[in-house]
View (spheres, rainbow, N blue to C red):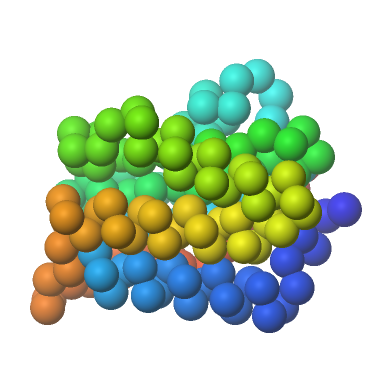
Length: 146
């Protein structure tokens, strides 16, 4: 399966809307990236994708990436240093576990939507939405070629 075929058009729209809703609750920036394979450690690959998507360019360093390697059945949720200064490992693990529980049932969009909701709630307390907030990163899902 091509990574871009993971979601139906309706699911992709649902996820983009979930990101937009989340970013109305927090100034944090959320991205989703899906590809087939992850060679090496999943966190290392997630960091490489984070960097390639320019996610360190936010003013408050408050970007978060939801990374999925579809065929390898691996995923990670990582944040930039501004987020990591406030959010502990326990939260990242809880969000990943909630997402992966839905993945195990074959519900990928639901799993990611669950994680986005958890991210919005957590980030709101540390990075509240500001009236002059600018959307610093695209909301669209990015897909790898592998």
